[in-house]
Structures are given as structure tokens and as C-alpha cells.
Image (tube, rainbow, N blue to C red):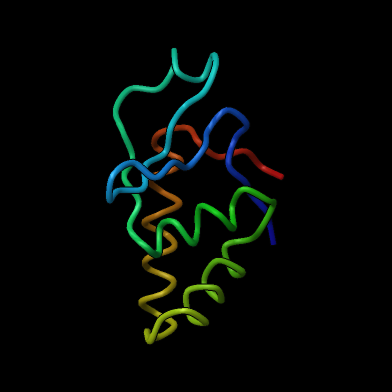
Length: 92
């Protein structure tokens, strides 16, 4: 089971009533756009700030939300795909 984590140089910030991912330092030069997180995205981003696996992320959603395994897996896959698309993940 491979682990992944958020790359150094990205932080989560609350601005007004939104939670966004903000690039810091040299990462700001490479990052175009903005990622806004909903409650489950915030939960997953926090988990991914330390090395964790996809299975642990699924378990986290199942623990916090009244959803089934398939929905949790689909949501985690979509979230990880978005982070990977923006090059925010490192293998841990």
C-alpha cells in the first residue's frame, strides 16, 4: 500500500467562508489557479499533510460521513486525481 502526502510549499488557508490551498515560496511560481476545499476536502488535505494511504483516506471519510464504501472510494479517487493534476502530491 503506497503512501502519499502533500508536497512542501502548500498550505490550507481559511479566507472569508472558504478554505483554499495556497502555494508558498517557489511553488507559487509553478502553480496556476486555485483549489477550494469543501469540508471533506479539508479533512483529506489535513490527513495528507502527513504520509497516509488511499485506504486511510477512505476510512477517514467513512468515519466522518454517512456514506458507503463505494462513495468514499470514488470521492477519495477524485480528490487525489485533482491534487495529482495540480502536482501537489509527493510519494511518501
